[in-house]
Amino acid sequence: MKIKVGDKVKFLNDTGGGIVSEIIDDRMVNVRIEDGFDIPALISELIIDRDDNELNEKPYELDNKPEDSTKSNSYFEKITDNIILAGNLPEKTLRSVYFGMVPAVEKMIYKSDIDTYLINDCDFYIYYLTGYFENTSFIYLKSGLLEANTKERMKTFTQTEISKIKRFHFQILFISKGRYFPQDPVDCYFDISKISFYKENNYKDNEFFHEKAYIFKIAGDNPEGEIIDLKDSEIPDMSGKKGTKKKANKVISKSEPDIKEVDLHIHEIADDYSDLTEGEILNIQLNRFHSELDNAIERNLKKIIFIHGLGNGKLKYEIRKSIDSKYPDITYQDASFKEYGFGATLVRLS
Image (tube, helix red, strand yellow):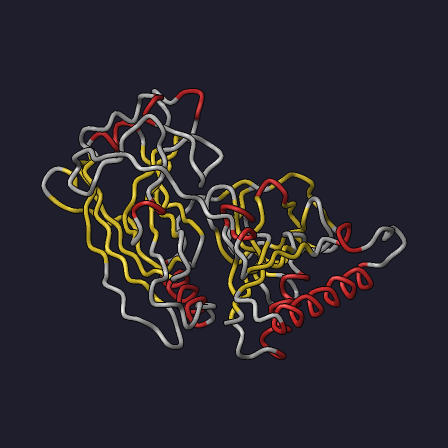
């Protein structure tokens, strides 16, 4: 059974379920739960639930059929009306955007298709337009809105298709709300005509994917802190010429003096929770959340990260609802996907 937007699903390894609201990529979708909150879920961990009396235990596959354009545009307008933009970002907030190319079959790189990703590794939302130059003209690839500290699959190319591409083109706008500092847009090209994507040694370990990947930088304000360390390889610049490689200066958030990390998983809070109901567990977690948040405010911390995990999304939803209602001057967003996946919320206190 193939998955599509509008399908009713249940979580294979957790309680509850919802309606598929968006296809993220070939492995993940967004599921809208009963409270109207969208949470990401692996397709392999979903089971079909066509009605209350019938439960098909076969996990979903992805339906790659294109959606109706009218429906897609309507959904895009809906999500852009409800995005959570970071506000009042400091003037020197880093801008870090990368393009990643990942072999779909790591053990057969010489003939594997290549998955391409746009990676937004900064606190800005970005509007983007991507395309590529083939033969004598540019061809539209994808455009849209990409949230902070996340990535999106652009397209899968065959080896034959990518061998015909001379260069990729990117246009990017950086967006934040509240008091903001104007950001110069990015308009750049990246020459790939001399890269052999069928050679295994062109793909390196990296911070964005479990698989080895070819990653290059589109935008960044701090070369020493933002250039990806490709180890034995060199990083090409936007003209396609090779430049000097620079090591990544990875920052671990929890080591910063003005940021705190709080794990809200119940086993980190209570010694014995085997007899507790789901509602009681949630109350304990929310009490810890409020206690730690109030303490962080009193200590004048700048940021606090709450690790809530994925689960059925209820804890994450309650945390964000509470901030909206009780702390209107505080902003929040998903914490870095490199460190926490989709399982943590970064709260900005100043």
